Image (cartoon, rainbow, N blue to C red; front, side, top):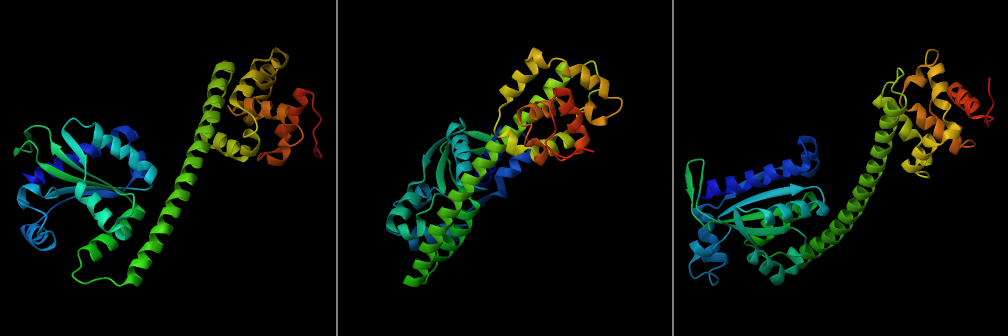
Length: 321
């Protein structure tokens, strides 16, 4: 029964992660180690009940809540919030924070002062899963960790907590140092990931605007969307794009004073392949907005810029041929 319950809990959480992630690629950006389950053996239960915790349990079999357990390991602490939400929002079980885990942290904060999240979930009703009856209130422990927390916990908890020998003060100091470094590292990585996500969102906004506006305003031409070319140019011009907005780009395209550029683009398409790409409208805008500096970042042939500058009535700020 406990194996079936652990299987059920793991599968339920895993499916929900995949659903919220929106596909396998995003899923594997989060889940870095395959989710695992474990069932305590009779020997392990006996050791916990009558050796390590002999004064704790009046009825060990009923009171020990981690007879079954599952574990999910993600990349960063910021991603643990998603998993916590999934655990807490599921109707298939009732949940509580793992009291035993909290007790461990209180009794020995040197070893358990890390941000791993532990729950115990209890089946809300009798469940039949894979032809096995799971009784209401059957418990299962859920461990949610980051990769760094996992490495720390595997060494600190599984080797020192379960060890029959007493670790020296030097060992505890080493773990304390690693804890401080781990927390700092995680904070830096979370900040870096947040910045990357912000930049990716901005990048995708420009990519979408370039494609959308070209299809809208040049629909009667041989315009094509070359995603690799667009991505290359947007990345190359990122320094300039950070100084303007998509709204400014749209305002330029709506400006009647520059409405003639659409005819100029049409007239040049037979001679220049670049004028048949969706990125061309953005190039006009940036030429108008950064006429003195665009050339320094422009990754393609200068002749294209020369044509665009000419259309806009601008004088190139570089030596032309």
